[in-house]
Image 1 (cartoon, rainbow, N blue to C red):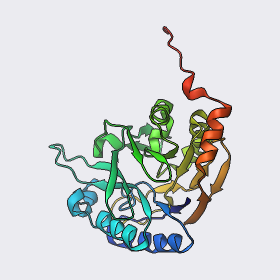
Image 2 (cartoon, helix red, strand yellow):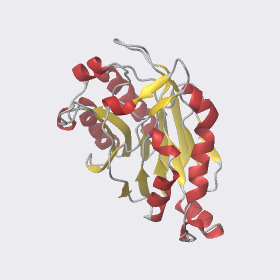
Image 3 (cartoon, rainbow, N blue to C red):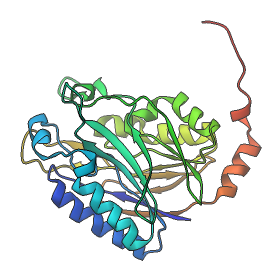
Image 4 (cartoon, rainbow, N blue to C red):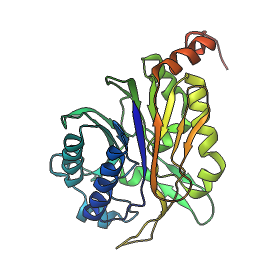
Length: 276
């Protein structure tokens, strides 16, 4: 299976982002991709909650979800929508950061709500409180596809190795890490974290990312690291898109997963222990 990672520079305008994303999907499908992956918050990159409240929609009404499902049908591809920011029915008004796996018939095969919230202080001038605007998910998800069992995750999840071990032990051969990573933490940690998750589990890690300075009609523009990456089950970097928007194509070979897990069968070597 040929997979295509899309690296986007999305704005806080869902309609404009949908046009950009569908165009890149068409380009990827034209290059032979049967599985296309978009980044976190494909529909809207915004730090302004009032603006999000104005432009975001519930899942059933979301224009991006509908448009990307149509694109999957039009091009006959599997599609990972890295995530969409969506309204929920929660009394506190928090949104969901939700990933979707779409089949070539446009059906939603799997949904995953981001479990770990990015509540951090990177520096005196850069801090994030994702849990203020988004409610955390509670369920890990592995989905069946014709080419591989696929484990879903989103961005900050990558720092929690136990999630990926659980996904791999549940059968996942491909781990998805769609992201909108901070430039500071991205430069320091992005590649090591992705390679570690691949090495620990003997899985492909596919991480489509947002990049650059994101145009904002309201609030402070956000910046993201880029460097969408595909990592082999042995930990090799198969693709790195750098800082510019674009498309990276990689071939997925299930035999590579089996070979890596045969060479180092760490997924079956868990032992109980006491303490600390």
